Image 1 (tube, one colour):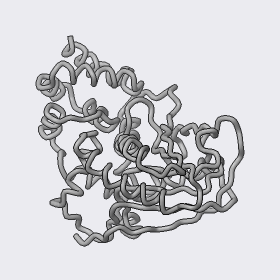
Image 2 (spheres, one colour; image 1 turned 120 degrees about the horizontal axis):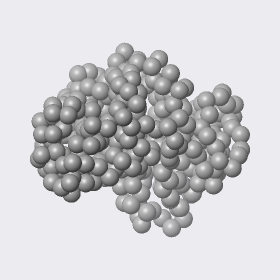
Image 3 (spheres, helix red, strand yellow; image 1 turned 120 degrees about the vertical axis):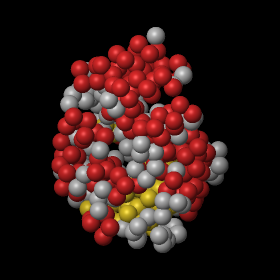
Length: 317
């Protein structure tokens, strides 16, 4: 597959917003202009994708929280983020880095945010201020109660453009604390841009805190024509390796990782018989960590996952 080197695309949306002490990301139409740019490590411009390329081989592992893969992309994104921030001089010097909202279990972009921040905080010129903010979702009513809500939470990458738009209309809104963002340039880290639905949704919320600029930083950006024709392309990338239960189980048992929401949700999506086999090969420390995280997350504490969580508790002892 022919993939371009680094490309830069600039987008401008008409936006504006209201001020309040604590802001929920809104879905209303906004009206002022704000400078917004998009940078990615690679752009997918042609299909098929060459999955023998290590760049794509790491992607499914990143989504599960494998440390080696977080480091692989984190180092590349950190160099790009440093260029973005330093090249903005002598313009705005106060930057805040963030990613998609989460509760307890991070997504891959949140792990990348932490990596980039730790890497850059002592590298940037003294004139630049950089901080890290984790956006959080509201914690009430997070419980996954049935297969439909599980599908919406876990299988977003299979959705059409229309389904993605509808999901965001129905979804809970991340809360933005104005003092963390007001008047500061924002670097928003994410893994992939396909249809841009999430980006547009967050753009409206950030408009309310008047940032001088927003830079959306991605591992992958999908060419618009490809994204429109195949919005499920990220699902194909996710499934390009580690698609089988056996591969997944071996990874959990043998690799150093920080469990992501995708990892724990996939684990608890398997039937009881497979979970019993998986728990047999995990050491007690891993099972204990998984139990603690799954319980704290709040999505898996109801009847829908009760048998699986009870099995895990018995295996922990």
